Length: 211
Image 1 (tube, one colour):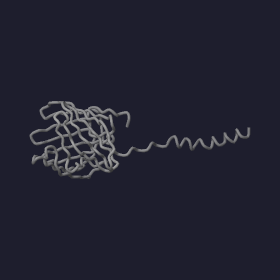
Image 2: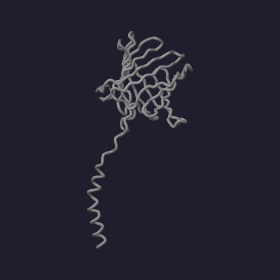
Image 3: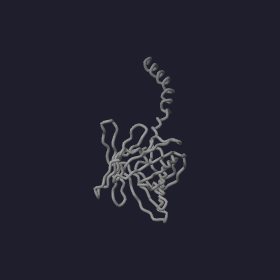
Image 4: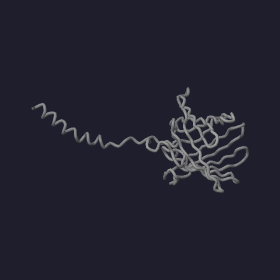
């Protein structure tokens, strides 16, 4: 009986501690504005200035460990034909290494490796890249995070970082605006070449319940 009373007393003393532990908040996930996980996919709807619409998907097909310890991710963009891009995510950055069009066997290595995004994003962050892309075309890009905005698209409402990118490709200026949401990725984009304007919006993504 004495042992039972001692055990009961200890249990009563531990109950407040157990209650506090049960209420302890879950750790906050590390911010990531360009999540890459094999099998994840995103579906977008593109609309041109004259109202023409088409859908395309992005899907992470594979990952491969590199000698420097980072992973190289293969992402496929699919509309009428597949496009393959290879990304890596060293600390604080998202890099694009190469691009390929499997159906017509066209491919290119970015020279140097292209800085696509700083990650995580913060208002005022800026970065530049200058190099060569497909068929040795000269490309210059200058990007800046200009604001945090609420974005409503078919996939939902997101708090997103607005990234404005000025591009000069083969001497032609292009303005691109992107909206990236934490732990989701790209939710909206706008492209303006002067003569051609288009908008792409996220309409669905595969990992809504797993994040």
